[in-house]
Image 1 (tube, rainbow, N blue to C red):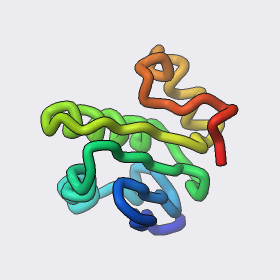
Image 2 (image 1 turned 180 degrees about the vertical axis):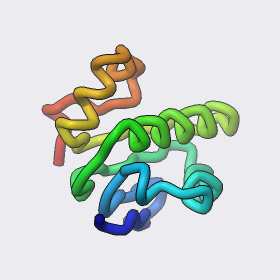
Image 3 (image 1 turned 30 degrees about the vertical axis):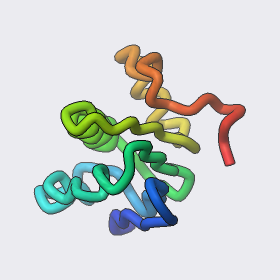
Image 4 (image 1 turned 90 degrees about the horizontal axis):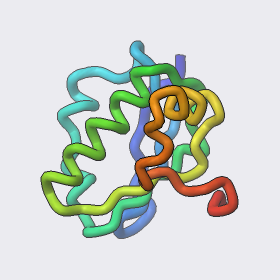
Length: 105
């Protein structure tokens, strides 16, 4: 298990490092959403996510709900295949919050 870290990379730019799983996402993680209002456009890079499960997708959905309430745009890029497959099962990948594969990097 790799601890979950949210790393600021500049205005509105964040990297998620570690695991996005039931064992790493706790109440503190869910409640620490202040970073989502640091800019009107938020980009979250998931390229350094080591492992993920449905808890990772649930957290992303919570972040989207929060940003909608605060009139902030959010996009996820470099989405791990495992997480993308979970999103596709529910049709969530079609919401416009996922950068296309050609936008990686």
